[in-house]
Length: 260
Image 1 (tube, rainbow, N blue to C red):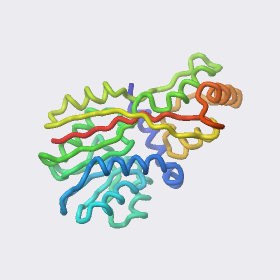
Image 2: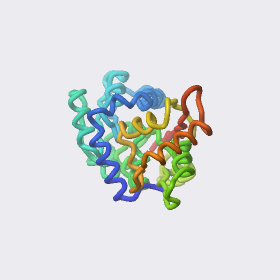
Image 3: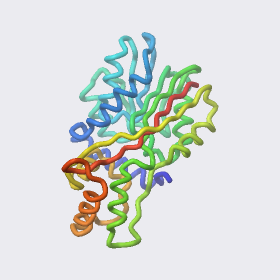
Image 4: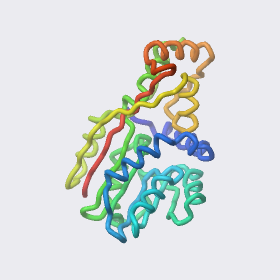
């Protein structure tokens, strides 16, 4: 499944509201961004790189610092995120733009990177197509995307303890979905792989605060998580998915490495 345009708009609004405190919660994203930059490898001096879904800009700034002589631009669909990036890193070229409608001419970038942003695109075919369009021939596309088993424990705990049996969640795309969408575009090379990483929290409330702090609670249904439901879910979570004295949360990451 994927987000509807209406759900994507709601998600964008949540990210906008989270811009002021996003960095306090984004340690996992920053670590993954370092791995993404390592996968991209060395770029020649003068290369132009786009960070699609840049958030508050730490990944783009890190890439610019690591690759001497490389020009880095970034865009984010949530204007407050893009504004925060420009304020923190004035040297970056920044714009507010949706990855599904990149405001750039064709074949201008030597590489496009995206770190945990593309899962929010309602139309991934359009997003991949736009990235393909702005890349030069031989240009590289490297991305990390959250997939359907991300926060599996959270979804399971909330669903199994829901007092309203109509309770349901929108889930992210699967590896097979992402692979199929990408293979429909004429890349010279298209490779995907999956891995899982674990994050630990003291309890369910801390996990939910983390998700909300990132602005990543855009998958929420129109449903109020009352105290009783949260208490039941926390007990279920601790019993089924313990980690030391707290709980664990799994992130399923799809790596995309492509060449135009």
